[in-house]
Image (cartoon, rainbow over the protein chains, first blue to last red):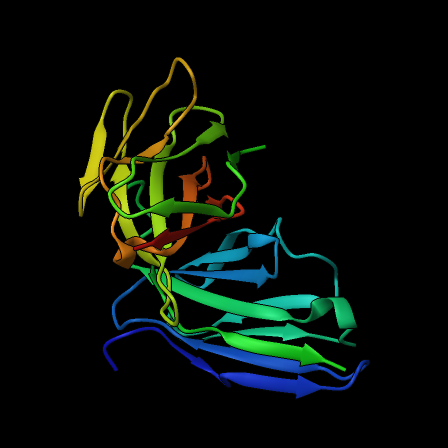
Amino acid sequence: GAGVSQSPSNKVTEKGKDVELRCDPISGHTALYWYRQSLGQGLEFLIYFQGNSAPDKSGLPSDRFSAERTGGSVSTLTIQRTQQEDSAVYLCASSLSAGRDEKLFFGSGTQLSVL
Amino acid sequence: GDSVTQMEGPVTLSEEAFLTINCTYTATGYPSLFWYVQYPGEGLQLLLKATKADDKGSNKGFEATYRKETTSFHLEKGSVQVSDSAVYFCALRGALNNLFFGTGTRLTVIP
């Protein structure tokens, strides 16, 4: 497709279960970013990839969160043993490169609800 | 670490009023600065950017000037319209080329 695609668009899970969120960036974009948007919390940086490597993982909230990117394209964000405070919209974005003035293109997000 | 602090909202203005949304930053080196906008029901999109001190970014009647001396990048528009109602995010590209966002400011413009 032409834009950043995220799946699923909505995910409801039970506390303690693992979830996987997927992001398909725009073709040819080498940089990929994950953010979390919680009500009243703005956009929280989680991790970004340049190619398949992650220069900055500092935003991952805990060791329950992990992300990988393979083939310089699709990325998955995995949350293990989900907690209610993990409920949020998880946004993925990509850019042509991680250059200083590159703009990000955002997906529509995955709304995660942990019951 | 690198961060942005953004004026808290919500902000409600009448049509044709003047808008300012404050944004200040903390960063090592010389970051690039951005404003992103999220219209109702849509994803975030870039509104404007500035990559060095004294640069002015502008788009759709909005402007912001990169002020190194005050570490600020305030968003302004001279005459807002109902269609400008959205959430506005200030953002900074840090030393590791990651991109940090502020908490967002919700603007509502009433006719």
